[in-house]
Amino acid sequence: MNINKSYRLQLVLLLLVINTASFSSDNSLLWNRLNQGLSLNTDHQRVDVELAWFKRNPSYMTRVTQRADPYLYFVLKEVEKRNLPTELALLPIVESAYYPFAYSPGRAAGLWQFIPS
Image (cartoon, rainbow, N blue to C red; front, side):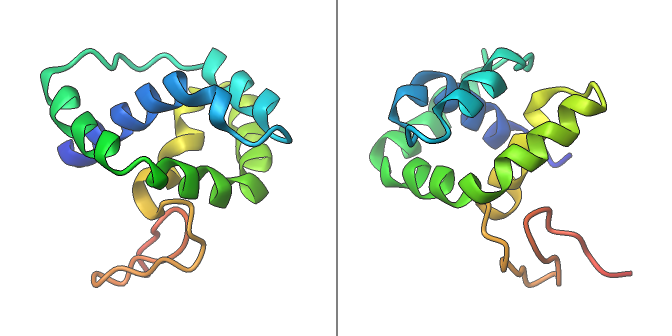
């Protein structure tokens, strides 16, 4: 994983833990379940630097969590079924901001930003 994406994932995890109460009431139990399975260490100096951006742009997490609502249950269910770290359910936040039609200049597409071979 790209080091910048690793730091972004750590930030997302940190913000999710802090902001669970702000999620839609329909999925708050799901987000709480996801938070309980987190295991990635978010204690890093670069996290503080990037966290400042999120503090200046609070609407970002609101948009991303709203976009995740239709998918998160299914993604988390598959992650848990395979006994994988729940952080993997958050990877689409880093890759595509949970926007299913995301498309990068490198031809990566979708939630997971797969690149065609």
